[in-house]
Amino acid sequence: MSFSVESSEEGPAKVLTVTGEVEFSVITGFTTALTDAAGATDGALVIDLSNVRYIDSSGLGAIIRTQKLMIERDRYLGIVAPSGLVRRVFEISGLLTVLNIHPDLDSALAAASKFSP
Image (tube, rainbow, N blue to C red; front, side, top):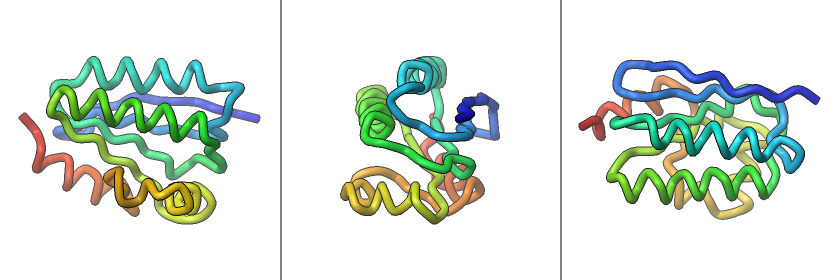
């Protein structure tokens, strides 16, 4: 099983591109990447899950904690979850109405640009 997180700057946002499977065995690295990115940006944060094949409840929990951090800092968090199993997990968990879920990176960045400091 492979897992990686790459960070980049895309206009007004820091983008974390996640690849592989986000589950309990990699949650420490995932959580650290999210927390570090949330603390390091004065703008928006976008988590791109387009290349994630699977996410479990520990991954959802890490994203929810990151959302809370971003709200506390009056910052925007966008999630790219285009389709398939990952989007279905967000749907089943009821998080589609709680988080800012986007079908692609372009729409997430467009939304993020409206919330830039």
